Length: 108
Ligand code: F3S
Image (cartoon, rainbow, N blue to C red; front, side, top):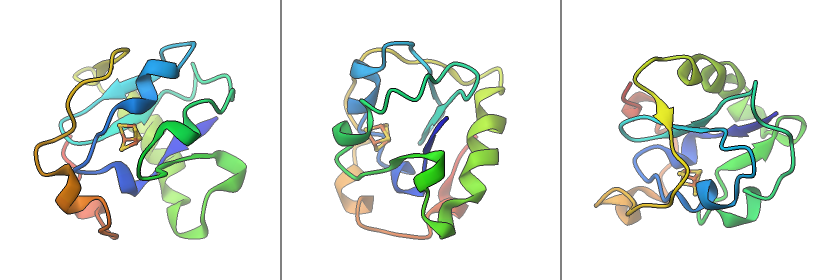
C-alpha cells in the first residue's frame, strides 16, 4: 500500500485525490488517509502532493513507520468518508507545511 505521512497534518492540500484511480483516500478533519484495502500501489499520487507526504510503504522514512498502522486505523473510522475531488487546503496550510512532529495535531 501507499501511506500518507505526518506532513499532511494541518495542510490537507488534496491534490492527491484527483489522480487516484481507485478513490482510496478518506478525509478526516485535518488529514487524509489511504485505505490500504483499496490502494493498488499505482503511485500516481506521490508527485501530486506539494509537501511530499505520500510514500510507498517500502520507501517510508524510518520516523514515519507508525503511519502504516495509523492510515489503516483511520480509514476504518465511520466519520472518515471517501474524498475524490480536490478542494481548498486548510486555511493555514502554508503555515504548517514545513513543520515536523505534527502527530499531536492530528484530529479524528
Ligand atoms: Fe495531504 Fe498532500 Fe494529499 S497534504 S491531502 S497528502 S496532497
